[in-house]
Amino acid sequence: MKSFFEGIADLFVNVLFAPLDFLRFTDSWALANILNWIFMLIGSVAFVYWMLELKKYNDKGEEDTSSTSHTYL
Image (cartoon, rainbow, N blue to C red):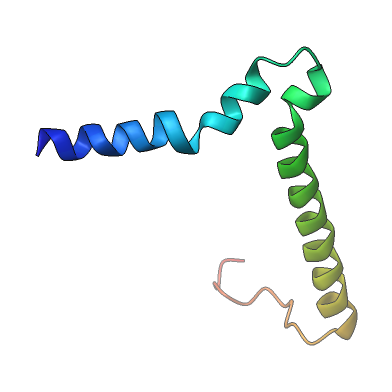
């Protein structure tokens, strides 16, 4: 069982993360952080999409916004 987990560790360290080692040792700051920029771009696009969807549903006015959930409110 130990060799199974060592095989998984070897796969990730020596094969799947090898491109990230290349990016880590580059002299360019922007190239070293390209993966972070890609994730930030995806997150920004998703945020804008979600805000536009919320605005679309808010403009329809179908949601019941009355506060009648508790008697003390």
